[in-house]
Image 1 (cartoon, protein in one colour):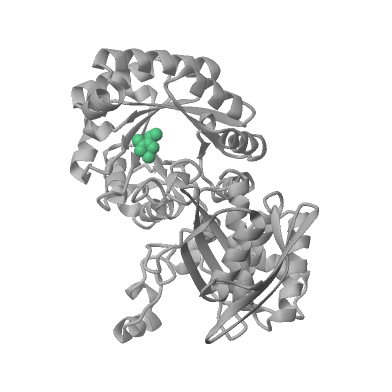
Image 2: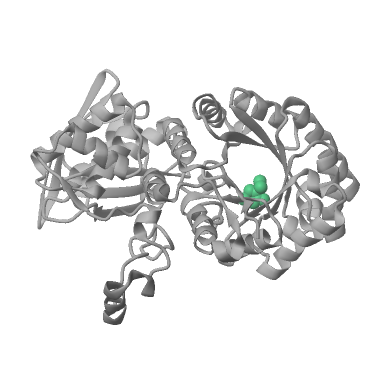
Length: 506
Ligand code: KIV
Ligand code: ZN
């Protein structure tokens, strides 16, 4: 049986970024896009340019700098959206405009207040408009899975006639079940006369935990493109997870006879990067990339594994990017050892980034004897993210606390050329509350702390602590992350990271 090639359309930067609190700044989005390209993703949906100047700029920057993949921008059926999407991506190697319009009765009646005829007219007009600007146009029938089948067929036929090269069938609200969803794909293939002129795509949400099952069912029924996100992040319960769909096709090649271009060894680094940037932690038991995905606890399983790993393992951990040896570098490790570790972890850094990393690595070896993979990953992520993002930085701090006494906090922050300082007994409940209040005071932001988490990124008494926070500022949630061998310092860095995102408007 001949093998099909499935197009991987990644929407981590668009639908993924719509996860509450998962917003990324421009530099972070560019890093994620670069990683997606080196992962082998065919199409990167970089954002929704008309939404804000920040979104426009990040899509444009990705279009200009990220090579080897198609860069796509989202647009509603509105002239301004389509124009803005085109302006943002026109310099990409292979630009794609993604136009969408809701088609279901519920959306037509309550959201759009449009008749079927009006939907057809809009589809034709705006897909044609996008096609005149860009040869590569995708059309999505939003809420397709709840649309009357005969009407969906008409819309799809119209979109293809107007120039769409990819037709996407979203299960927008995660309502579909696998057999029914597969039948939609089969029916489109049977009934739409020009269907062979376009690639059929699916975009499944996970509200019932069925995104992956629905996506696989659609592939079996003939879909040629799947839309997914790293770690399955996305609106509400998220989207189909890229790593899961790729490894399902890879591992069950015997059944699906379908392959992707994804370099599977880069899946774990990709997952870590997105988790680190968004602050949306990967659950330990998450398929493929969770910390426990390859951990065998039961004695019977361990015995089987020792005799032959295939007894209990359907994939090898190294094939998805888990590296075998964890304990690595130390004080005497040089640049070459660090570079080869960076490559083994799946990252590609330019010379400047490598220089910064080496300095940060050396500084860490003064504070910590054994440097683990998790430490290196965390250093890389800081190097990748610092460049243009940091506005408030920590100069120094002192914090004292104890039973039955108010915490004492002294903190110096830099903001551009000015250094601001506060010192004295704090009204906070403890040291973390104390530094949080001091940061609010110095930066002039009225912040509410919504989430505070600390965990160790490696092992040992000198392990680095990673702090993840979510703060509320004027009703919007901003996330921040900080890493240090000193947990109070990591907390300050995390709160400042969140404050810097407020400054950048994301
Ligand atoms: O879920 C959805 O319908 C979408 C479309 C814009 C493709 O995200
Ligand atoms: Zn979606």
